[in-house]
Image (cartoon, rainbow, N blue to C red; front, side):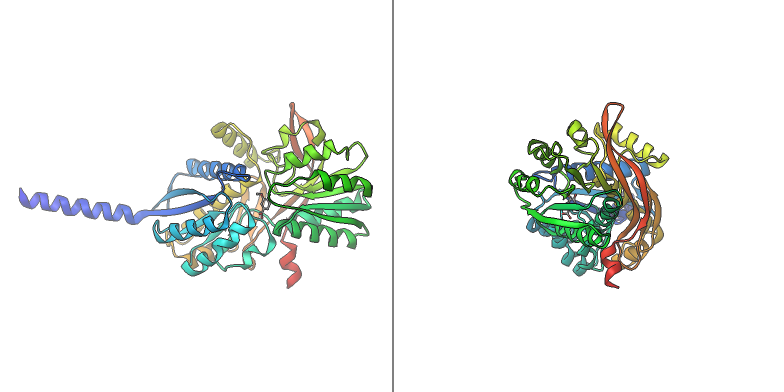
Length: 386
Ligand code: VNL
């Protein structure tokens, strides 16, 4: 009797130990509160959808998702990344709503040799901050240069650019301007608006006096509705000034609430909830059913970030070491809801289609309707540095 008890206790302990050894933690660090909360909401919903659809077992491991709210404050991101690696033994960190938070986690990814899968932040230079960074979102040069080409080909000659004053805004401004000038266009003025508590009205008043053909805008996801409201209030549309930009301004999380003022706005981006493919139709339907709201470009990047992690763990046959996972992520190719994608093995950035889209009404709802495709665009910032 005593011996049997002993055996079962040992078996139980071994069972518990082996079950624990099979668990693999992925830390999702996103802003769930504050001005960028919509990004956290979208990313969390998409990562959870991916796991619900594909199960939590990969190569003999059980994936455990731990979601942390960094409020988009880099010092909090850094602490959470440290805790996830040291206490939860996270084998991958994901998310990073804005560029400064992606930067904040980079030294921890490098030191701990843990992949940092950036599924939101989009300043070009981010992937150069650590050899452990891989990105499934996009880069601002990748989205901005095609907008300039389209504008130049479509009768737009004079443009004022207006961007949020930090990394991605600087990238958007620089790559729109250099491409547009190369195409023969003129930049009348370059305006930068603060990241915190932006008030676009005084700047837009100035733009009206410049009388450009178009305003090119980049604001981060979550700020588009306010920009659009002030663009209308300042009467720029009525003055015949077109609005163009990267798709962040007509974000699927907000576009339907913008009203008819948004109709006709042309943007370039890598994802629209309206993208016409079987993969996207299935993704949008499942996402809306689970959450009651439409997925945006942050959601698709979170979904693909988890897809990339599952792929890598499968490829390493369950080896969770950072170098093995990163090696497996380089060159990965799959069909995303956004279209075909590939992780550039040299830069660890995503190569993807950029679509030209126009806001239109479909079944009574506003969507970014794609009408032109620039296939498999690499981040031009890194291509130019070679
Ligand atoms: C960033 C770029 C953030 C694009 C965004 O939304 C965005 C960034 C929060 O790199 O900080 O739409």
